[in-house]
Each structure stands twice: as C-alpha cells, then as structure tokens.
Length: 274
Ligand SMILES: [Fe+2]
Ligand SMILES: [Fe+2]
Image (cartoon, rainbow, N blue to C red; front, side):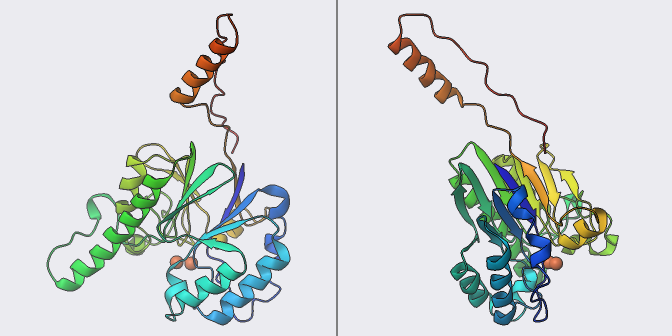
C-alpha cells in the first residue's frame, strides 16, 4: 500500500485550477491520498466547493482527511465536511477507518507545547479550558487508535505530536504547533507512521519517543524543501508479517492438511523502503 500525504492546502476562493497540477501526479505514485488539515484557508463553504472540484478533477484514488484550525475559522466546519464528504472524501474526527487493509486513526489534534513545557491545567478557568481541548483531542486520537484492528496502522493529524517536526519554526510558537499530549496515545497504541501538517516551516521528518516515524507533510514545507518533487510525501508500507495467532493458525492448517511436518516460513521482515 502506497500512501501519499499532504497538508495545508489552504484553498482560497481564487484557487480554482491551481491545485490540479500539484495533485494530479498522486494517481501514479500512491493508492490513497491523505490530507492533514487546513484544507481551506478561511474554512468557507465556497473554498470547500473549490477543493471538491479540484480533487474530483485531479485525483482518482481514495482521499482520507482530517480538518485543521483554518477549516474552523468561519464556523462553517460542518458544511466544509459535508461538501467534501459529498465529493467522496472520508473525513476523520476521532474515527478509525480501514482502507486496503490499512487502519487509519484520524483527529485534528490541538496545541499546548511539548515535553516539560507542555501547558498544564492549572490556574485560570480559561487555561483549564484550553488544556481540556488538547486532552479531548488526544482522547479522540486514543479512541480511534484503540479501535483499529488491522496489522498496518497509521495516524493522521493536523497538529504535531512531537517537537522534532516543528523545529525550524520560531521557538516562540512551538507551543501553538502541537503537543506531546498527542504522542502519549501513539506510544500506547503503536502505528507504522504518523502524518501531520500545520508547521509550515518545520522539519519534514522526526520520530516519537518510541521510534515511530513522524512526517510533517505541510505542503508549503514540502514545496520549499523538495522543489523538484510533487508536494506530497509518499510512504510505502511494508507487507506486515503475520501475527503470532495467524502464524499458529497457518501451521495448524498445514499440519492438518498434510502428514508432513509443517514448513515454517520466515515472515517478511520490515522494509526500509519509504
Ligand atoms: Fe496551515
Ligand atoms: Fe494549521
């Protein structure tokens, strides 16, 4: 399964025709397109309609997305969702979704800072509400991850779960670009890869503290870092080795169907092709 991911398309009222040449190559490079939020610039229904047209004209593979903070700007996020859903885009907001044997847990996420600098729920009610929003988004992600039943799993976010992929932005705004609260569920429910956007001037690649690859796929970052490539990140998931249960069942079946001792095949190891 080849995954293409991009975030921060920031489609405007004037974007008609601009996105098609950027996205069209995705059909030859991937089996599914993942969009990591800030799909629109002001969260307007007109912008969503333009994006829907652009996707329909250029993209022939399934599209799965989360919203970003910009998609909430005008209070029209439900209509933005409906317009994109009607155009065939699967929008995830704390849901688990399976496509081609790959499980996708998607949530927007929120900000609040990283590591020891993570903002705590202490003091004013306004601070506690802000932190609660980050906790609620982390719980949405955790719920979605816990429902995944596939061997191959990925997480789709707008905000970053780690500090590493926001590095390059001004230090003063790190805390607004993501939060370690999103990393905790990823460590409890491991995934193969995490995609996020939002940090337009961050770092394209990082890892969670448990070693899971994290890709910042903000389109402005990809265009700036890799000007000769299409502005999406392609990751090919290696074929997952069978689980212990599946391997045991396979051996039992072989034993039952032949009197010969079962052949134990070496499971396919992880590939480093990305
Ligand atoms: Fe953005
Ligand atoms: Fe954003």
